[in-house]
Length: 194
Image (cartoon, rainbow, N blue to C red; front, side, top):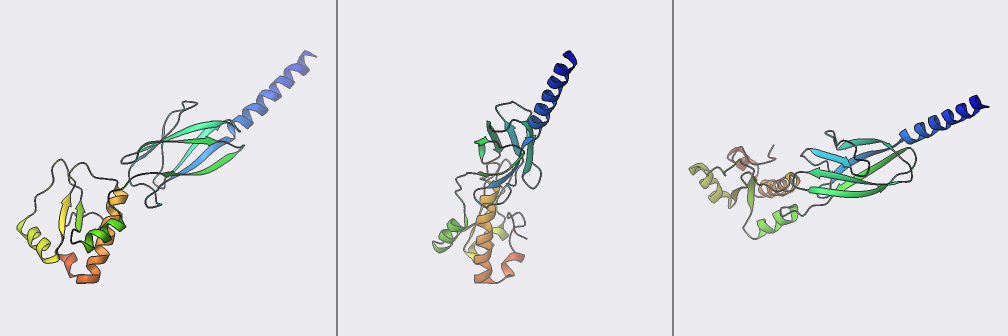
């Protein structure tokens, strides 16, 4: 009788342990601005069980294992420019595939690029270091000839996706107006110019 009870307990423990270990979150982090993976490092932490933090891969994918099914968890995602954002998640049994869309307010966008272009206030955005790099005489001639300003954020830039979206729209507008010749004269440190 004792052997039967012991075997039954062992089987229950194994079944519970296997089912407990099979619930996991497979997540993907994307920018609410671009719909793409944020360019900065993505830190992920599950706050209820206090498991160690993890870092998403270059494709924005991460995995949190050993969760219980039908339970609420809080996932905290930290990315430069987006801050710390928390997501409430209720798991189902097995693998829970989820996309986490980061919210951000962006002062620079394709729409702002259009508006700045129309109002004669367009810029080519740069991300420098501690202090912005001053314009050379050639840079000043470029600004005057093409009616655009270089703007260097120094070491406090907005979110990379914002800079990318703004600059890429400005590149398109300049190509439409000036052809491709301006690209040979522009500063080499303008962000996202290929």
